[in-house]
Image 1 (cartoon, protein in one colour):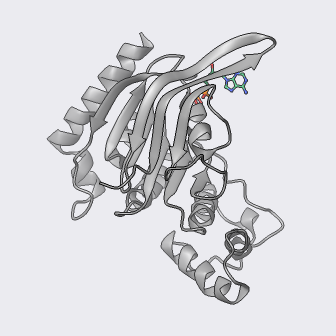
Image 2 (cartoon, helix red, strand yellow):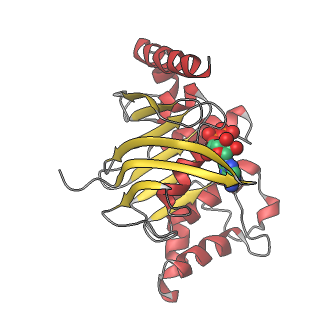
Length: 255
Ligand SMILES: Nc1ncnc2c1ncn2[C@@H]1O[C@H](COP(=O)(O)OP(=O)(O)OP(=O)(O)O)[C@@H](O)[C@H]1O
C-alpha cells in the first residue's frame, strides 16, 4: 500500500460567526485510498461541505491535519471539484469552457483541441463543443462541469451534491457515467443527501452524525462495478440490504 490519497488526522473544524464558535465537524480521522469512491451522507448541517472544503484546501482545519497525496492541499492542484451548480463561463462555448480548464492545467495550446474533444467525448457531449452554455440542458451543463474538473487529470475528484438540481432521469444517467470515474489511480469523494445515490455510486459510504459531524458509520460497498446494468444492481438483494443499513444509520443520527 502506498500513501493514502487523502488523510485526515484528528481533524476538527469550527466557524466563528458573530463571536460565537460553531463546531461544524469532528474530531475525526479519515483516510481515502486511490481508486476508492467514497460517498459521504449525513443530515443537513453535519459538515459534509466543510469536509470537502478542507480536503480541497479551501479551508484549513481548526485542529488536526489534512493531507492530500502527503501534502497540505492546494486548491486546484491535485483536486478537481464539481458543485451543485455547474458554474460555467456563459461567454464561452461548451468547448471553450473545457479548453480554458486545460489552459489553467498547463496543457500546451497545440494539445488543447484534441484534449477538449476527448474530454467532451468522455462525458457524452462529443457533438456539443461549438454550442453556447445556455443552449444546453442542465444535465449537459453539469457534464461540462465534470469535463472541466477532469481536465487537469486530478488524482482526486470532489463532488458536492452535483446532481441535486437535476430531474430524476437525468440524475440517473449521470450517476451511471460518474460511477465509472474511478480507476486504480483516481479517488472520488462525493457528498449527497440521497441514500440510494450513495449506495449506487460508492465503494464505501461514510455517514456523518448530526453537527458537529463525526463518523457514525463507515461501510464498504462491494457491489460489482462492471458487467451489470443499473436496474439489475438497484433490484438486487445486496443493494437493498446496503440501502437499509445506510438509511438506518441516517435515521439514527437524525433522531
Ligand atoms: N462560513 C460559515 N460560517 C459560519 N458557520 C458556517 C459556515 N459554513 C458552514 N457553517 C455551519 O457549519 C455547519 C456545517 O455546515 P456544512 O455546510 O458543512 O454542512 P452540510 O452537511 O454540507 O449541510 P447541507 O447538507 O445542508 O448542505 C452548519 O451548522 C453551518 O451552519
